[in-house]
Length: 70
Image 1 (tube, rainbow, N blue to C red):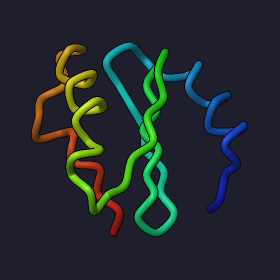
Image 2: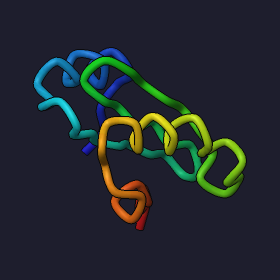
Image 3: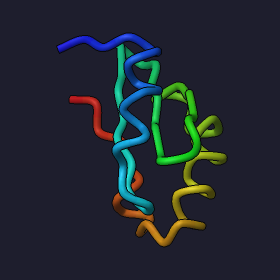
Image 4: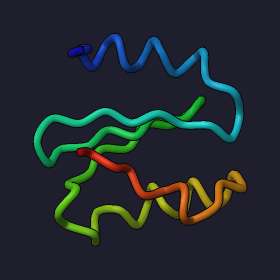
């Protein structure tokens, strides 16, 4: 299933606080939280830092911030 960036933004309002969803196309990942959106490259772990820090600040365990794409 494919969704547009606009649809992704609209879906975020349905998320519970402390939850997220992620979408990807090849190595480009978008992680969406209730009030924030992050775009990063799956292969470049240095681009993960802001989304990991934000997720941790919400109390999401680090092992749940792995963003599988397979």
